[in-house]
Structure formats: structure tokens, C-alpha cells
Length: 257
Image (cartoon, rainbow, N blue to C red; front, top):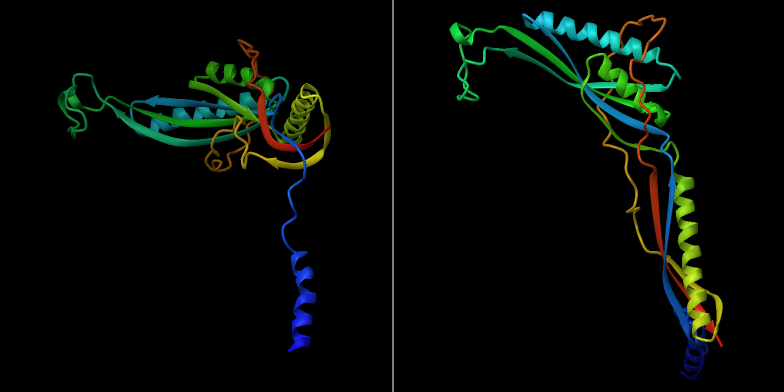
């Protein structure tokens, strides 16, 4: 029994060695550092609609296909040769009836006779274009408008690799925290001691201008169209806003006398 008691006492100090390390003794300074970094966008997103009209649906689709071929050929020949990822979606083919056809009866079916006879069709399709470099998105938008595009919109762009920008924001946050701690230490008549603890205060990046939602899958491959030139009637210089990343850290320093 005595041997067992001695063994238990001998093990007691060893078990306490695995306890959590004690908090630093003496005064400390805890601050929150904020960092921010910006960079020009590498690419930009452009969206627009293209339409074709005809007396019936097949001819409207044919007109749309012709306009699309001209647009894609002209984009391929645009000065500066930007890299374009052209995607399409939201195909719509609608019958057109006279305005006198039940103007107040929305959603009700109509017979294709008399004042409700079909007088034509409109086929339209929405496009999304990823433009690289982003600084040429203005010219691409102008060309799309020149060739019959409508509802043209340039959204925020993005970076091919945003890790360097995130790293820059984090370095800025850590430097800001140290600056604040240094100021507090000097103002209190002490000296800034060694770093005790540092923690990333945000689990996700809350300051980024994100790229738009992923566009739909690209359309089926089309036959190659050979062009020799594409004259832009109205060049347009513009670029999306710069890409921003932020970081926040909570930092604790020792305060020395």
C-alpha cells in the first residue's frame, strides 16, 4: 500500500505539466488591427441581350442566328485582341400580336384570329462575356451596342489570383495592430513588449467585391467565322472598380515598464 501511495505522489507533478499554459504575468495591450488592399481587376463581366425579328418563329430565329454570327465575328476581330469567354443563355421565342388583342386580359389564351392574329415573332438570347483585360470591357460593350445588343450591363470584375491581395491586406492589418499597440505603450509611459497572441478576427473575407455568380455552361460549338476587320464606331474607355480585400486581427502584446 505504501508503495502505491508513493507512486501516485510521484506521478502528480507530471500530470500537472499537461495543463494549459498560464496566461502571461504582468500588463498587456490588446488591439484590433484593420487592413485593406486594392488592385485593378484582371477581367470584367459584360451582359447583354441580342434579338432577331421575323414574320414567324423560324425567320426570327434565323435573324437572331445571323446577328449572333456577326457579333461573335466582330468581337473576334476587335482591336487589342482581348480574351473573350462568350456564353449564352435564356433563349426566348415569343409571338407578337396586335396591341388591340385583349390589352387588359393578361395571361389568358388567345386564338390566332381576328385582332389576335400573330403578326410576327421575336427571338432573343442573353449573353455573358468575360473580358480580359478588364480595361477593354468598354470597347466590347460599345461594339455589342453597335451590333444590336440591348440591356447592356458591365458588372464588377475579378482577379485571376487574389491570394497576393489577401496577403497584402493581412500584412496591413498586423502592421496597424502594432502601430496602435506602440502608441498605447508610449502614451502610458511604458514600452511595447513581445507579441503574446494574434488571432484572425474574420473567418471569411467581408470586404471583397465578389465576381458575379457563375454563368451558365457555354453554348454548343459554332462554325468558325472568318473576318478581316471590325470597325468600332464609338470607342469607350472604362474599367470595373478595383478589387478590394480586407483583413482584421486581434493582437496582444506585453507591456513593459
